[in-house]
Amino acid sequence: MKILHLLAAPLAALALTISASALAHGTDAPSEKISVLQDQMLKNVPGKKAMMIEVDYKPGQSSIAHRHDGTAMAYVLEGEIVSQVKGEQPITYKKGQYWYEPASSEHLVSKNASNSKPARLLVFMVLSPDEQVLIPLKN
Image 1 (tube, rainbow, N blue to C red):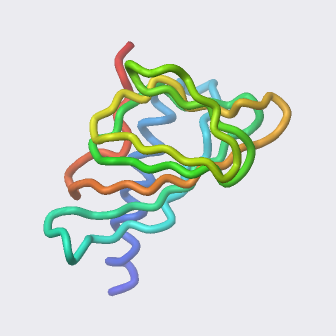
Image 2: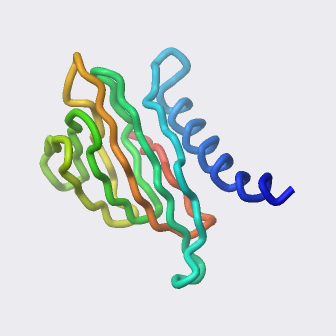
């Protein structure tokens, strides 16, 4: 029973994230693969949790325009990722590079820079348990 309790939060977060991504992409468009690696309440920061998420992009694949309720820090594990937050220019990050997104930033572009090679991203987020990981932007 304890194992089920420990797995409930990560599985719920993963389901919500993938559902939001799939709905925003439409049923015909393939979406990036999102894997929740960790989802833990922070004992030293009451009311907040940390999440570690891996995002896998196939060649040419991109995420929908979105925002995160929580603060996000991203690290490129493989390939190159083009990222653009509202009010800033797009930046191409290569393997080993990273960036920070304040809570509620509008992430207009997040995509694999290559049409022939995969890309992989590690995202670390801090948010409240009731905050959403990914909220699709309407336009």
